[in-house]
Amino acid sequence: MRRNRKVSKRMSRISVHTMHIGAVMLMLFVMVILNLLASSSCNQLIKIVDQKEKTLQSCDAELERTSSKWDAMRSSDNLDRALVKWGLSMHSPSANQIIRIDASGHPYPGQTSVALLRQRVQGGYSAQVSTPAGGAARRRR
Image 1 (tube, rainbow, N blue to C red):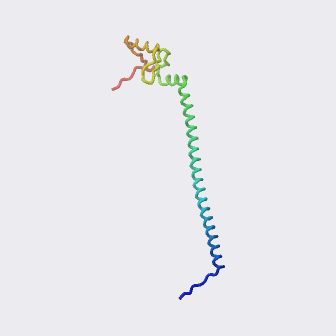
Image 2 (tube, rainbow, N blue to C red):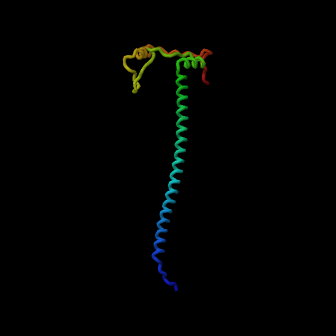
Image 3 (cartoon, rainbow, N blue to C red):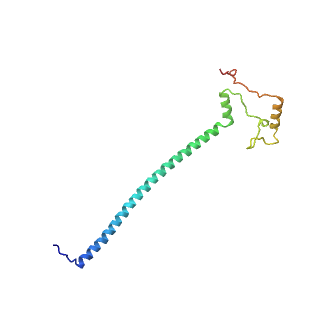
């Protein structure tokens, strides 16, 4: 049979101090691990944000290039060159040919072009269409 041994007071103090030191060391270890995990996830998020910023900068640059290209294409000189290139004999409308309409689709009152349009419709005028300089219009079969 085993005999119950008495633990001296000195030994009990040492074991209690050892447990406190062990608990503090375990707590420090857990805090270091959590800090490493947090810093690695922050680093990953920083990389993702940098990639998104680079993508945004490239999209902004592409938008700037496209809008400047579009503005250059819409200039009157380039429009005239394109019309000549494709053989279209078109020109910009005069002020009395422009009809301005509101959001509902009705023309603004008091425009001389509206009066001319109504007169043209009542008088039976037809629109004049010019064909390309190369020849007659093609027929569909």
